[in-house]
Image (cartoon, rainbow over all chains, first blue to last red; front, side, top):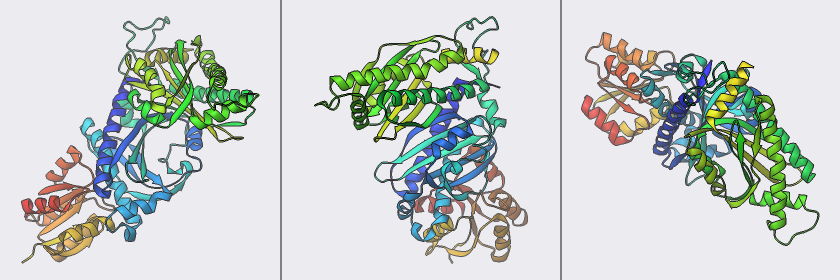
Length: 396
Length: 118
């Protein structure tokens, strides 16, 4: 099966529109303003998903889908926020499970409307099923099985209370396959030349899955490099390949101050890579790397240390890609950034946005165990070049 | 005499919400939790109006509406649904519903829909 990443973009827009409708319905029901923070499609293995959701306790509602779209959709929120939600619903405190179930039913109904109207076919929802789940058990059935699945994920944040919802949709391959299967030509010809207009974005599904594994390996390399340079024990908490609107990426990094390094990638795929630490994490990691105490937490010495760390991490990240894809990828010298999170990555997104609206984002969270520090790696490859490289990978 | 209403929704929360909205101005003759109960309670109580959820277990609201209208062509049914899909709405109207309201609903929407239907 070939996946057209532009068609996947259209699906993502539908998911985003659906999430906005769901947010509107939840706002009406709870009297609290909710906004859609992020909508993205993940290509992830069951193992990746299990790791991503480890340690979370969730309450939610799931519905089965049949008709225009087959699969399952889930609305979930942190169990600790259950009382906050119930207090917002008329009679909610006494209705408990029934109230939550109906909230999920209404929100998921809103989420699916856009998809159904786009498809021109009704999507039948099964009666909602309430659940309380640990870890990845929150995900739709089947998400953890198999080598790789598409999972649409939207996060809805309340603006005035601690109430965040996530919507997950795992489409079965049937009708969804028709939506995303590439109608364009392969990204590369049998002779190895790029297609006529370099416009094709159709890639084999298996290659996406391989690339997702590759991203994970790159993340592990990057974490090892931090450990080597700082002496801190590291672990990769999250590593996922997601397909998201580029415009949403800065908001994901957030408004807290961050420091780190950004790079331009040259080769196939070209693109950008950002290695970002929350400010306090950056200071702690730099401190662990420097042999002497410094007066300024993020002064010149720390900047140099973080640039060197970024250099080594970037190499660790992209070397694996280049080896497997059979290409050469080089990176620019590190550019140190220290600013509000969104501002550190906005220039990269702006440059890539000249070529594409959506992008594959590989986000990796690396945790250090000796000190409290967290590092997020955002890789933003050019979609057409990545498609060509993945296409070659499938033929080799 | 107050309009007699049957509420059919599998969610207790939603039935309570509708009851709160309607009580005082309408007479609630019963509450059904699925499509089969809705059909049986319709036959038992002969209400002037049914507020019918679409997605319900055992038998959904569209099937229940079709069955009620086959036996009672003058029955009035308003669909209450969390889905605003055009195709679903067409199916509801085809089944004979007089109108529909999309959840979450506010009291004025419910009263407007009832005012138009009854």
